Image 1: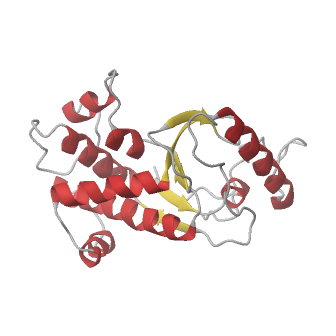
Image 2: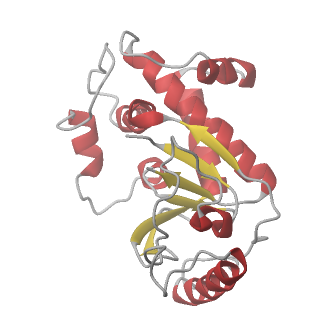
Length: 231
């Protein structure tokens, strides 16, 4: 199973005009089968769908937002894809969970799955007090708009999704780095380029997943574009 971080416009993402064989090119549009007369695959038509969704979502979430959901849409802005894989994503998620529950002993070896992991289960347990770090990293999409915590909503395809802020995610990633390593940007970049395999330690796995989040979030933040978790 592939897990990627896509940075770019939602028009580009939902058009699927960025995928290849690895990211399941040729899949049906989320707005319907490509063979269906009601499917939306044309970028111009998609841009109109996205514009309407942004306006509607801004109205529904106005109590949570400090500014409207607005950024440059269409097919002209650049897009970027960060390959992370299940193991890399799991490493980043578990890193956040163990950072928040520091009393729990961390894994030593590579983690193929996080099912029944004590830190993950503790992070997922409903509580009255929201944890900012877990709330922001455990999202499916991040917008270049400033708001607090993760917000439950429906994406342009009508699917339930949890949305977060790119700026808040960046602050959370900086906190993770300061708490766990205090690494410089060039060190973090090296973690991503060295790849990942099952003989690695959990710390290496966490570094790889973190580095992918860090680099893609940096690009999204500087480009003022959304970031979407793709799997």
